Length: 124
Image 1: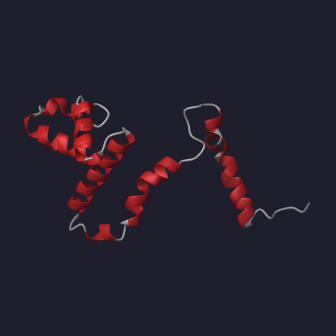
Image 2 (image 1 turned 135 degrees about the horizontal axis):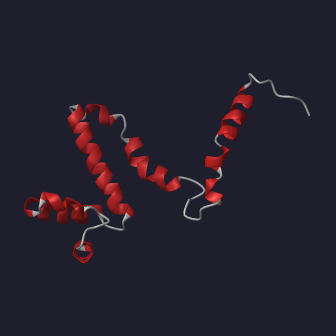
Image 3 (image 1 turned 45 degrees about the vertical axis):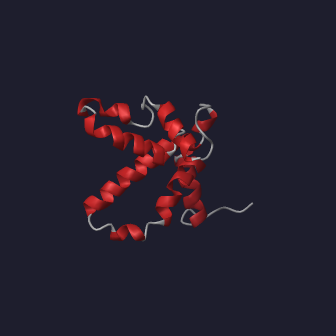
């Protein structure tokens, strides 16, 4: 078997892999870690598809607001909620909700999963 030149692309790829070997194989030691990141990539697919349109959000502030909404929508999905029903529920409650307890309205904390579920059933 021949040797690989240290300056070749193959040698750089091997070096890259070896320096990250511990992180690349961490999933073997912790059963909670997926072997791939397909879930994360799927969650970002819609954002990647619209990337060209995001140049025209109007302003940096508009882009930041859109990013916050995308984050809430994806987090609602990851927590088993219908994003539209979740946002409807939160927007209906947020005006009267104390700011010091705003974390109660996050997708993983919302106490009215049944209400959000009822919204889903009514929409069906």
